[in-house]
Image 1: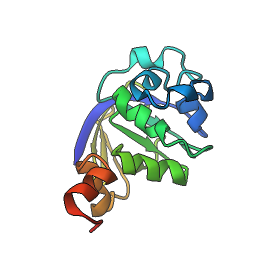
Image 2 (image 1 turned 90 degrees about the vertical axis):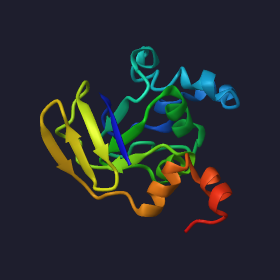
Image 3 (image 1 turned 90 degrees about the horizontal axis):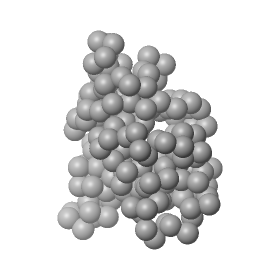
Image 4 (image 1 turned 120 degrees about the vertical axis):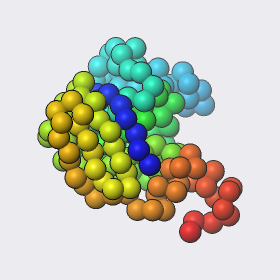
Length: 164
């Protein structure tokens, strides 16, 4: 499983309120509309700047706060293809994999906004094509890759009947 995309970088402690501000909670049943407000309180024009396939890169504790399962879904619907961070809040990590949004834990110090990355989730190698460097990290477990390849846990269970 490989992805390639342009980076949008954020710092530490990006909460689910940063990802989808609470004032838009009423839009949770209209995920396409909710997606238009991702990261709005960090960068008011973020949704207008991104393109399908772009990546979010962050520091520590990405997705902290409430367990809003629509936060990773809004990122995915907006076109974000993956998130790389130094660490993730556990519930956000689980929700993201379950809805089919790839995540990778890595040292993000050598990655900046605008960089072009190629990510290999099976090998754990992130190629920063802009800076011509490789960042090595722990690859995703095979079961997570299988779940992501099916578009999330529900699709995986529908197809295979169980997690194998």
